[in-house]
Image 1 (cartoon, chains in turn orange, brown):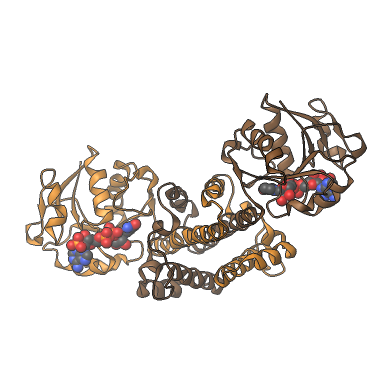
Image 2 (cartoon, rainbow over the protein chains, first blue to last red):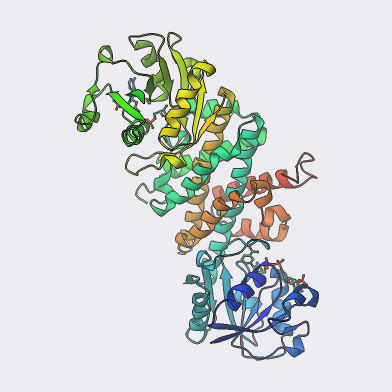
Length: 263
Length: 263
Ligand SMILES: NC(=O)c1ccc[n+]([C@@H]2O[C@H](COP(=O)([O-])OP(=O)(O)OC[C@H]3O[C@@H](n4cnc5c(N)ncnc54)[C@H](OP(=O)(O)O)[C@@H]3O)[C@@H](O)[C@H]2O)c1
Ligand SMILES: NC(=O)c1ccc[n+]([C@@H]2O[C@H](COP(=O)([O-])OP(=O)(O)OC[C@H]3O[C@@H](n4cnc5c(N)ncnc54)[C@H](OP(=O)(O)O)[C@@H]3O)[C@@H](O)[C@H]2O)c1
């Protein structure tokens, strides 16, 4: 049985609370938020508090608060030498005050408040300052909610977090541009959805390198020119040009002698 | 029963052949390719030929050949006034010689030779020059293989094809860049796959406009600067900057007074 105290009441904390209370292997002993109102609705399920002095003893303290609040909050915790982790992809492990045993429990997924979360689809990137002492309980905690734990170091976590911005925010913006293009001709964006799904699914079989197709990869200048002429929005043209260049950098050994054809 | 003659033997023709032979409602009466060897392995299942003069009568002739070959091949067909369609997203309906009844049967999906195709996930964009006479049989043909038919005009088809380049080729290149970023720190690209899937899946619930999150949308200048500093590859920086601008164009009413917050 792992005893947890949860701090913060945003997207991540709320989804973690639900996942923890759904498993026998974890008990949320207490839930802290600076603003008690936000968690008042859970008061019959868990001890709630807005007073750091009242915090009870637990195996792990999870700071699921805004990135900027982590350092300050960790410093204010009125105890030492207990395991304190944050859930951020980009904040240093060392932001946590050094009076604690320090760790990171970073769920690499996008959370929205309303929607329910299937933690089997939420990889957990785990870092522990003292790996031998503290890694295994964090791994157990991830496994208890059905997540896949991944041991990462700070550089790897930063790289994953940055890459996540590309595959989540930037990919979604590419979808948005596609929406603008179809809408401008009165075509249904929905017709593209199976292709969007298949493009993501294909990664089960092939690396993005091997999965690439299309005019940029073939260096089909005629089609590229036709597409650029068809794009009436100057900004869409800029994106088309840069990503076409990008594909050619990756796939053309003339432009990029380091292109690795077998990956 | 719809009788079809198939011309061409590439990715699209091969997948269509398999789908047609799997349904009672369609008979492939003949398969033509300029190079008979490519289709020789099917000779026990279907009449094959490399001679246009030998083509038999059918309800629909499907030219699943390279874009550049469509006009020429359609002109060489030794008959008139029969329904001839091509399968291209970008070629004009009028590329088909005007001696024929003309149409387009464009599968909006990415096909690779090896992998099997589930046509229920392949939307079919259908155009017919004589809509009243020829649309319904093309619609029936799509439905016979389990596809969703969509009636489009030429402008809509061109927009969909161009948008498909964005959601397929460009999205895949974004995945590739994420792969390069994770690899450069020895982190596993695979950890990103659930996020990639979820980003695509989210479109079932929300438009790309409403699904957007992250530092660019929040205009979180500190994180954006941190990310740009962390990117060691100049080209990755260019992509980061342009797509961050793109998100801000879409979401910031100051930069783009036409941003529509409710879509
Ligand atoms: N959302 C995601 O998709 C996601 C994914 C992976 C990791 N993360 C990370 O998880 C952490 C939490 O993110 P979130 O999305 O859950 O954030 P959120 O929804 O914005 O919630 C932030 C929480 O932090 C609390 N907080 C803010 N400043 C505080 C302070 N000075 N002292 C005490 N509490 C403070 C807020 O309290 P109030 O309720 O009083 O405002 C709120 O409960 C962040 O480190 C984030 O980077 C987020
Ligand atoms: N692949 C996709 O993902 C996809 C998706 C939607 C639509 N399309 C469209 O479907 C059509 C076919 O694409 P594909 O991917 O199947 O192409 P592909 O795999 O490259 O095959 C092209 C076929 O066209 C034949 N061909 C080329 N030039 C010819 C000529 N001058 N005369 C007669 N036959 C000729 C080739 O014959 P040989 O076998 O003798 O070389 C080959 O059988 C294109 O219009 C394409 O835009 C493709």
